Image (cartoon, rainbow, N blue to C red; front, side, top):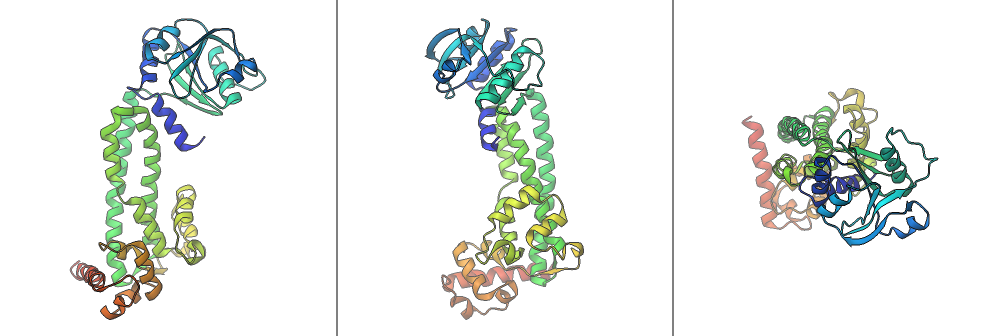
Length: 354
């Protein structure tokens, strides 16, 4: 199931949404329900999956859905949540589809979701739980208090990683000037950034379930993750081998690999292109290309930064460049050349007074 599609479905049933209001009313009324979401139900009527019932074709409202749940049978609702097509429906999915559920309603919901690929919401009357099915994906809605607890734990973890991430970036900036960055320094910072983004992906599911109740937590998460992805991409552009990122120094593929396969420091080093050096992370010295330094200077766009790197090859060449040599680079006039020189001098001063 696509990550974004799952988030959309969780938002659909988040607290405060029309559908969630109806679900909460159904549970408070000590009723159960099976709700099948489909935009064009006629094909399922012809196939015999939707049988009997009352054809309504009326506008959707939470109150109507709640009242209809008092009857036996399933309710068929449009995917855009605008129309209630049928109620009191007998659903007949393919019985040969294996199901690991025990209750009749849940078995039907699981088989229906697998057969059609559509969203099915099952509300258990006895257990008072809400389960979402779509294709082979299944998710049981969590209690709000549990979600809040998980969110708080996740945010605290990201706060710790963010603090160490920022310290690592500051250290690398100074070590770049002193020409003593090791492969370990780079992969350690990358590991912290990747971990933050991976934790945030899990938290996004909880935020989707919280809906409007998670607004403050969402703002906090966005603040913690500010510029993390951009910084990771710049580190990739600075330190990955050209075999990994190509002559254009495009970090996209390497970033995606890091997010999916960067499980530890050695695997990160491997993805960056240092397969032979990954066993000597502390000894292998690195030379930055200078992208992150250049992008930290105001009014230096990526296109100009690439021109500078193309001209001076790496940070060492840039540090030794004269003012006149900088102005010879395409896109660098006197103002930008001065800004670059000031940025370099600022880092040198930090290294001297550390």
